[in-house]
Length: 220
Image 1 (cartoon, rainbow, N blue to C red):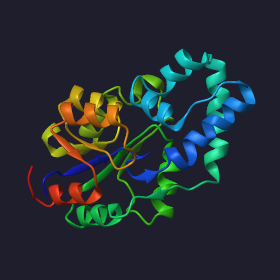
Image 2 (image 1 turned 30 degrees about the vertical axis):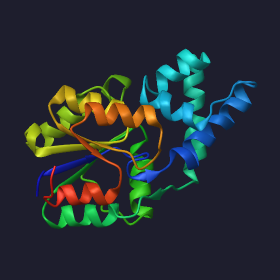
Image 3 (image 1 turned 90 degrees about the horizontal axis):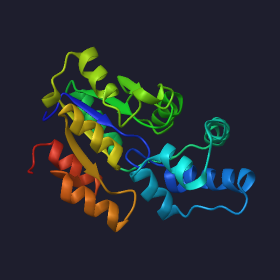
Image 4 (image 1 turned 120 degrees about the vertical axis):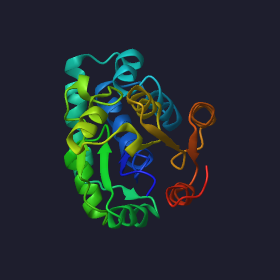
């Protein structure tokens, strides 16, 4: 195998969740608590890409820390009964990696509970390690702590790991630790995001099939 450990982002990397769950949830929250303010799906993707969800909420919508706590509980109630679908082909990719003795980890801005539920409901292999939103803010992606802790727990070198993510926070985290990064673009067709990822990331995959072929030994 090319890498001993595959580290997946969750939303829009493994499951199709922003368009179907997270963006509708945020719009519903704004309608209830900040009437007159809205956020298109494209804006939501772009602001989560850079500068990230928390800076977006504070800078674009004026949310306070107290507002963010309310939004967090609103979001958790919303996603509790809504299960996103995994992208076709990822289950087979993960099962093959595990069968070869590889490790699977998740570093995401969803909570560990939601991540493990989504894996279970989509019949994906159980991750060996999950770091989610429940971590303190200074231990969440793009902070390098989750990747550093993963290396420590499993006794891995940076060269043993591939981080797979659709957005810039994952890229920033992987670069800080010296871990290879694979940008994936199957969740959206927003030119600004794809252009940044193609220009800055050595590895870019538009389809699950392309990623799978790379992990099986095909170039690049």
